[in-house]
Length: 183
Image (cartoon, rainbow, N blue to C red; front, side, top):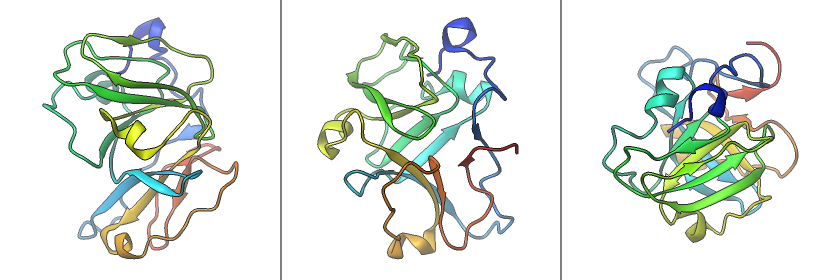
């Protein structure tokens, strides 16, 4: 769950370089998913990533969930800190800068805990407990978020290493999350 008010800088809208656009390209029949890829290991750490980009979604976070299933995650953006007050389960939390580089990691964060805001954090990815260790993901690794259609799942292209945008657009999809510029 996102920290609101001064502690979590809930007033960030428009003050960060990550912009958000609709996740659909108008084709309602084509189901799309966002996945999180560890670029350093060229491995997917979550293939069912939800995005909490509005104030309401950031405040609610995972409070209405009983658990996160394998492959699920929540990308809270913008967010510099999170808490697990009222949550029913333990999660892994990774904080990413605007390039998607992991600058902090809190494995196995139990309910009723807090991860205070850290300078340079653009967003926080919440994963099932144990996922960070199981995937070999570490501070300094880069996470790339990719929008893919269900048809692209079978033929996912390899992502190049580099310092490019935190978000990537896969062939055949439009209106994806990306970095920089004005929406």
